[in-house]
Length: 303
Ligand code: NAI
Image (cartoon, rainbow, N blue to C red; front, top):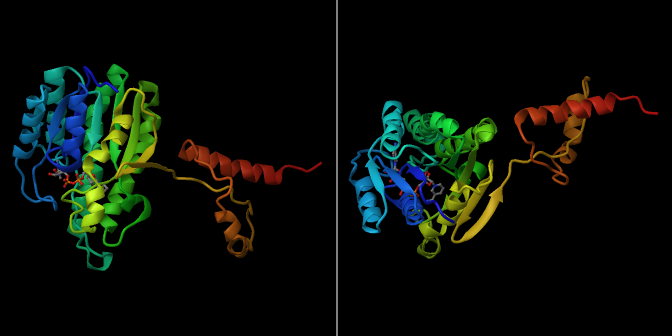
């Protein structure tokens, strides 16, 4: 799987998963802009030296790379980061939105500032980077964007209301950008990794962490970033295992208007939630159309 001649931006690539992504893309021929704020796991502090160290590693392998120390929360700095890649290499083919922080606390104890900052880094950081590369990808009729979501967003995790909400928001962003990007050859996907990094140390046993090598996630990123990538796919990857997550819709029922609707709905909730015959609508409006279709079918005269 070659990335020869392509230009990639990987955010938060000074360590952990981002570093593996940047190295893998470079090994397969991509020119990589390595972004990292270089702060602590809670987002405090910062230095470009983390990104520069990965650039040095890539160059030592014979690859081409540049460092960037912007915070993805800084819209002006993100635009300058994308311009840095375009000025040097003429295009941006791949954006991997990987930068992230944690500020875990149970919701009862959560400070609003910690909630906001986590949303700012994960959601607005991804929005800034997507928005800055979008006109370039549209103009060249090609782009691959990989969001980094999380099982905490898809399925929830104690103490991660801020992180889970921000990670699931990236899936929502993916859904619409994939629809809007389709006619420009822009594919947008999401990766839900599990890996032993500074983010997960202390959260799992040593035995589990030993199985979760960050490089085991990389094949999923490469598949989502490649010319042959699907679009609107959520790939889970950890310890060399791979799954796809779907946001599905059950077949449901039709009740219609009427005073007894809530009582009837409560009675038939098990049938509404029955997962046999569930599907993945192609858009939000497609889901609305399905509902109207059921209503029209219920009203159609029977012969
Ligand atoms: P990590 O802490 O090693 O990597 C995150 C990187 O993002 C750090 O190098 C950090 O300096 C950088 N960063 C943080 N805020 C930034 C900002 N505002 N601008 C630019 N860079 C910034 O952790 P890890 O595990 O490698 O995480 C990578 C991504 O994968 C994150 O988005 C994380 O939420 C996600 N993830 C990781 C999982 C895991 O099991 N390790 C599970 C699910 C998701």
